[in-house]
Image (tube, rainbow, N blue to C red):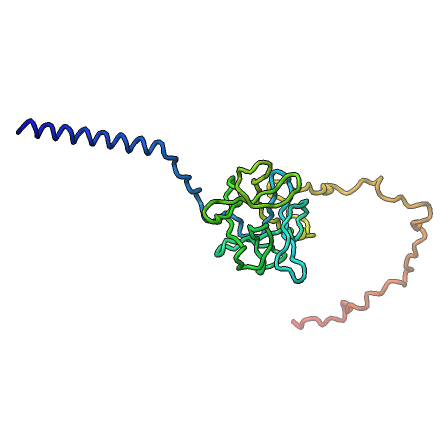
Length: 247
């Protein structure tokens, strides 16, 4: 009886070991699920930005639809900071919009094209630095790319050969304010300009003009008053005119 119990316990232990080894083998054989990239929140700038394709060096442009058409064009062309190359990103709907076309038109992955949004063909986009611009689609990411020979914008799996899926997203530089015409204040570290030296003594006689002959009157040329020309001391009382004190 005891031997049966020992045998049963040994069989159970062996079965556990075999089951664990089988699970490890299956786990190693199965491909690991693709990890979701960190930062599913969009890293698009919050200001208007340009999108440049790294392969071609051209900028993404959204063209307005023709009259009566529902969709417009999306192309890449020379970067000239034109208004049709400026994009905005709506955080709530995660849609790319062209600044020139306003809020009514969104970038669609079907075409791709500019379509009225919200539209069944307008897709949500995400952009992660170093991971391209992609739309989740039906669960399989489709990346925004450019065919190098035709510069045609497309949305496809990044494994398709001959297409560039790397983009650089950069905020649009705002125009700088005009420079102030007033002179810049002197830095405290820069030395003040030296003042002009003040004169310590009057200039010498050689610095004064010398009067020529006849410029000054001769000593005998000045008129002198005659004996009666001076006022008599009549303004003062005579000595005998003063009253004498009576003893």
